[in-house]
Image 1 (cartoon, rainbow, N blue to C red):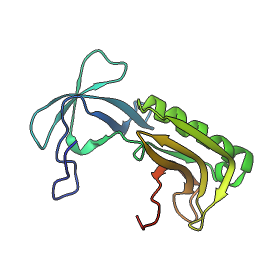
Image 2 (image 1 turned 120 degrees about the vertical axis):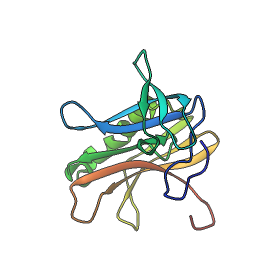
Image 3 (image 1 turned 90 degrees about the vertical axis):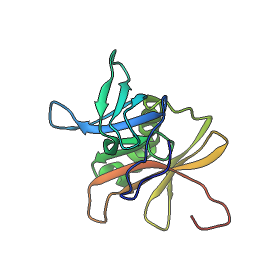
Length: 163
């Protein structure tokens, strides 16, 4: 994937890039699909995407696609108890790991931290992982202070300096 254009949208993808498409399913619920770029019309899209499990490509606007990386795989789950209950919280890392596998990402090693450790920003570190020679922490956090939506994502560890 190349840099971003002025409005923040990706400037373009190249053939074979792994992408994530967040759309709405036939049932009206959010749906995340993964695939590979099969063709690019221009630097500003649209993009032909070969979605996983499909035999033919779909033409998708560039601004609807995200590159797939360890840091872009993110779950949004409704239920404050998922983060408040230590037993449920300890299982969130497995949900994130399943989503990462579905996205086609290779995780070299993952070490669960059980119910996790609460961080100063009120998020919870759930696991340490390595992928592609880099170290990450899988975290769970609320979407907002009063929200019941829990986000599970991985962030790269940065030692000795601010991110």
